[in-house]
Image 1 (spheres, rainbow, N blue to C red):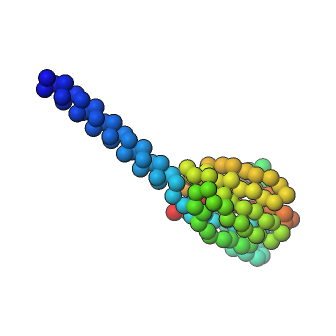
Image 2: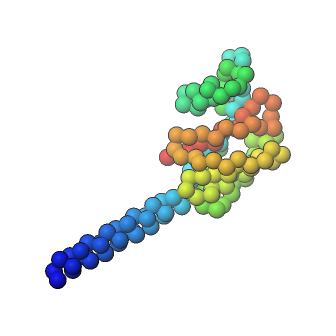
Image 3: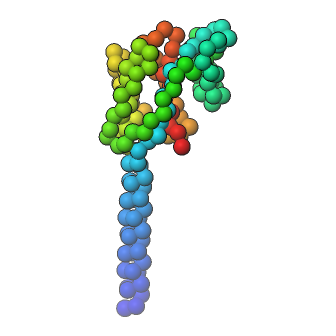
Length: 143
């Protein structure tokens, strides 16, 4: 009789533990995302305006099949987006909206170019074109 009671207690504790763990994970995934979007000027000449991109982003850009060798940040915006909300942004001639889909997934809508949906965990970047000549837009998650 005592063994059945212990087995039932252990089972109940295990179920409760996994239920709480799932609740905590779901809650953490729905927190607002702190993001940064950058308008990056691309060139084959040494940059004369803007500041150089951070080495982490430069390394990722150089792995892409782009024709440029130098990249500099012309403007940047840091913002927070709650789950299921969207943040409109304007960079030069480019209008865009960044939506938090939850679970560290974002949807970037660039007016005139369509949508991109991507997981944007810390350390990952989303790179898209812009309406400005020789420019890219980079979106990344901050701490």
